[in-house]
Image (cartoon, rainbow, N blue to C red; front, side, top):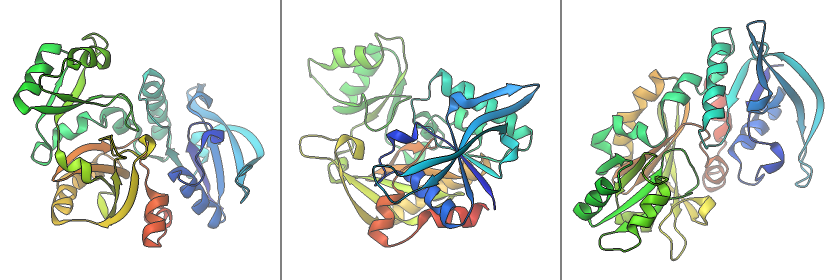
Length: 310
């Protein structure tokens, strides 16, 4: 029996019909292995050993009470066979500090995915800059003037913070819109925080694809997330609908450009966001979409993940 750990947000907040981490936990349970759940705040160091207080949990089919705690233990992270870091953004100071502890645990023999140092280094927005041939025209700045110049050049753009998820604080900027300065000031916290600004891609109205990568290789299908009427954000958390689609030749080409770097960096399970012909984000912290794709294509992606990693 293997011991599989998960570092997550509080289990009580899981959306049990959609949560990818739960899909992974269910696969662990099907294999007859033990599930160890913990939060970032449970991790610490004592006498140079990275440990955590963790709960051994059991899963149940009851939607209102889907797990129970069998026992709670305090032990070194290296005592587990595998640990998944699945804490959702924001990638804030607490998150960064946790990656240092996890990196030290890695050096002490703990096997942690995705690689802690790469979670810290590969910002989900900025990491796309390493693949310029795949991306739309992009500006990264904290300057209102610079961002307004970029919008004037491209007519329309999307501005987004560098540390959020689920479509939070993402706005569409249009040339000559009197709200632009106020939006920029809000997202940059009055020109004190860098943001990413990308040329608006009209294809987003037909959907934003989530392509899942396992050890540098894509699944052959993607989750197309279609904005709700009156919105442009293809985020399920923002009310988008979804459907399953096959990858296009362009999708596969983008995956070929990105895949080797993901593998080199130990970014084992990753979600690429592709709008039209362009890569817009590389989600490395807690990519989602597994439950939806399993439903559309009658598959078990979590099994594929564990078959290839264990």
